[in-house]
Image: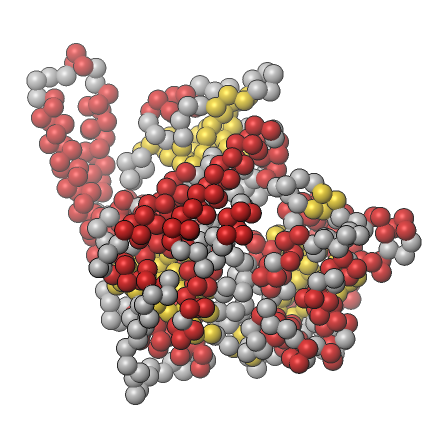
Length: 638
């Protein structure tokens, strides 16, 4: 368990590695590769510019090509603009901008000033590219420094609890715990323990166990006792999801920052939207407009009262802005943001008794401390048996940077952990292997999903299509070998991708396309590697048989599928080599995500000769082919 000083050093290694890697990729690889990775748009169209409700100059930009590539632009990400000359050389503008919000093919960008807009409009062939994010690292370093220096206060106590020097406290057990007939026993217990915890609690929610339902209930119950809570998550997508569920419950949410996916309902929760729709905003807008007009006046045209007039207007604008801000915060019951977003200036001076961190198993410890500075106690929710934080430096990973605060608290203080045990997604067969290996066999399938399937007794829910058996001769065996296509894309196995779609076509024909459409059966095709995902999408786009079902088929990486579910899931494992190397497939948490997305059927495609050298895959293969040998006595907990 790294100390906070060690954490800071490991974070510095990650920062230096990621910054150097960004520079290397930018210098060595052309924009074509950046476009394919979703980190660049070129060419772009520059649209209208205006001052938004927060008095920031923004401009709309849209991409004209490569519309099929999913991009990585989202709220808060730093970007840079460039142009390309006749010799294909890139020329970057000398300012940084920030994404305000992004749609699939359009985004709104915050510019530093009017001169930046003039430079952008002067470009003949403009493009935009994601830039290295210095801000989030700066916030994490500052948070660690603040925590290290804390003394004789609440922050110091939380630090000592999370690092084993103090024991977390609970209020006395109530003789009459609260009852929630719509929750199961483990969910009900978790909500009651959230109310008892004085310092910290971990709500451990394995796949399909209703973690969000439990969290929303816990937040609702806490709000009966507290005026306001702070709810954070590592990603904008996770914040959007919990904010949406709370809003549906009728709880007034104030979303700091903009949603990852722009829709009207979520946008109405944002600070920017609510600020713009406050009754005092038109008066503020008029004052700001007058101030901009004054600032644009040539010096020789300014009268003797220019500075006094400007000062009075600025004072009035500040007064109105504070009045609107206070009104928005006074009306909100939940303040929602990313962990980094909790450092937004509009939250300066705000403190909360309770902080909820959703998807806490994907957040670095340093990122959690950004939000923890504003709270007295914390509830971590997530699953540390699924995807961990993304660490790019191997030195930092080996040192323990990937060990999350949630995982640390769970290991140090087991009494702080409440495991949700009833899952509502998978049938019993699909659930059993994951439950035995990752959760000590404690999960139970809810009665309503235990036996569900698409075709009674004729469709075994768990299959492994062994690509080694598909290659009947040496020539075909070579076809099913993986290929390396670059550090940022990983591996590709084209023959396996083609086989994946063939298996899906056969399944559709067996079930009947009309029946699948009528019942709206949805499908997920998952692979750990971006290159395989992109190749699968190309094949799917050309497939005439599957075209009627295209809107019900999603193809994406394991990471992108976390939190999602589909009726039928196919997983292309890609790795096939004589050395038996499986790369990051040895991180079994990633496989736990992949194999727990399916409700009714899971098909794994991969080379048994390569993968089954690992005990996990050997037991999984046995479970698929000999289900009678896959009982709990055969399982091995990770």
